[in-house]
Image (tube, rainbow, N blue to C red; front, side, top):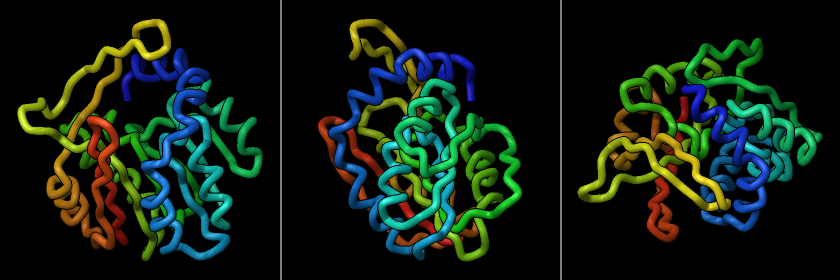
Length: 204
């Protein structure tokens, strides 16, 4: 993933963490993901940010390893969720974990991957998933007339920053997964403001 995104998240980490404390759209899909797993199962939280979802998954009885591109996000996560293990890693590069995971949780992270690279990145993640394991993803849905990819300029925190986004239809993302021999076991769309969050869980 590009270094611009890394520097952006390093810059906004503290503000982003404070700003997203009250989000709830992700809870039902995350709980559904946890329901497929057993207590003590090992989950890789991809693009874990400040560890908010890692903490939630731990409360569900799971063990969590979190990875993120941003060193600043990882520093916050380590303080907020000492029960988990965190490290800086880029999902566009090979992930070199010794263990296989029972679940991989990729919420609001694949939306930063260019579409030309998405199949490679999904295959990279699935290489870390054990047989019979579950993959959860959440991406932003594409709206009519909207480009499939764009750089969005924002000024939420009193300064300007920009991020790359890719947008999907539910069918499009499901096709990527089934073409990688994943079985879709859950899919849903949650609308929050102007954003449709597509949530999909698949089984290896």
